[in-house]
Image 1 (spheres, rainbow, N blue to C red):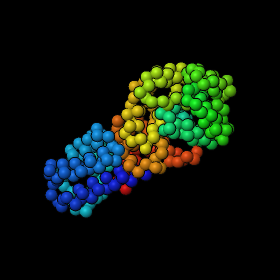
Image 2: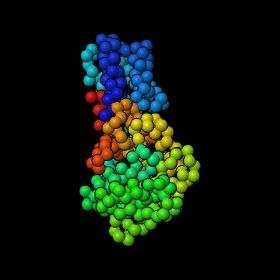
Image 3: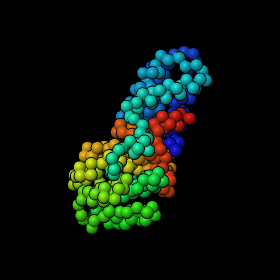
Image 4: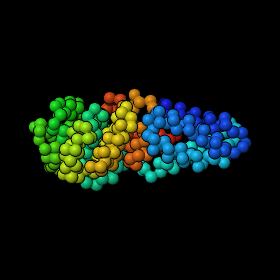
Length: 301
């Protein structure tokens, strides 16, 4: 994963090492090195604002620095520290610990994101994970407009053995969410997962509808699903959603097919929200916990 973004950082480390002996790096040295680095970042899906912020942080640290020849570890440490500093305000969230820390039942999770981003599959993956931990789950089919949306949920539900609370197509999505929560309360079910409609984020009516679902369900977490293959377009979509509904966590899907890697860095820097999982396939176990420091270390392997 992230092979191209990793190659950009690897090339930067090598270029810095090749540029100096025991002398100090001048501003001209740094501008040349970082100019090429910034171009590669943007090519690999790092948004311009994010790339500029990282380059500016690196520039401040590199000018006047003496780097011993062949000492790549020194350079890697400097770049690693810069990335850690740039992303320091974003907490790492362990999903298991988050769930354990919620004292009430049912726990309510609201899932957001456009159609085709992997929302339903992610719901199924997280359900499988929670079922293995001995928790019970019910789903709310709150996408009441898209043909086949309920049936898609029911296909996964049948495999996992969970119930889907549904209303006829065209019903109020908020009422579906409400009924699912009441169903869970009455039967002692641990977790309610609410699937929502995912039409274009430019659809103001949809956004207002999602805002109502959020208000009625009062979720313990709103989880936005990002399709890595959409690149920075997905970041723009998430930013629009966040104007209407608070986004607490992010799950990035289709990472197994995404070699650029830059959208991960952009999401963290631009949205300042924790990524909790990466989707790495279609199987229910194809979900990898995300850790910010691990991600940074992988970029510098």
